[in-house]
Image (cartoon, rainbow, N blue to C red; front, side, top):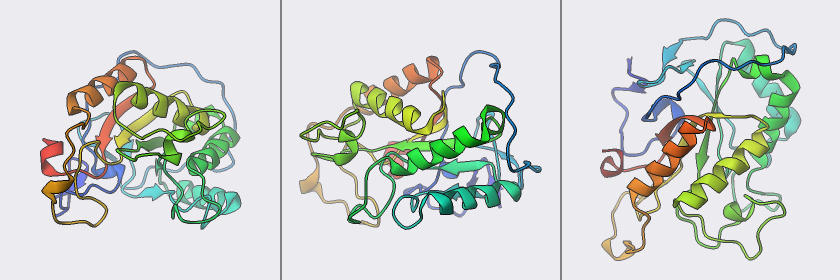
Length: 247
């Protein structure tokens, strides 16, 4: 059974998709005007429709993940998956600035998955895009990061660190908006924290790895709230976190 957007039996220490995300302050303001553009796939009713957490986002029971697009799947594969998902009533799409995976693939380039999704959103037009809930993620602590490098055009050289300070949050969001070719991200998640935390399958906390320079959670949250106020993101969430970080 689902309750409030997450499964009651799901461990809340490692949130893997936006459907399990915690949500924050609502975006102020009213509806926006869009041009009407025909879409190739008629959107049926949202399958298993439910509110995402305490937000006003209505999402399908299933969320389409995208992390293989750009390495394991090409653009044509991605478009086919999107068309099929939409035809079956799925309106919830999850991506990240880090994607695709694996990062060890020779053709890997951070942000390529968002680029492919952005090309699809441009193809279907604004009206069809408004029927979708687009979630993305900002990378946490990642020294000398090619992910952070791809936030600028041309890429920054040498690669800077991925951090969750105000400037990094804003730069990452603007880069995702550019690649996605949209004016807002419906759910922006922190992919993993700035502070040390065991994640991605690591289960033991190693105190010797704790860093003194971690960006305070309050600074990260304040930067995200600014972006909500500006209309660039609608809601915020967490992807890989501990119970401490959630609370």
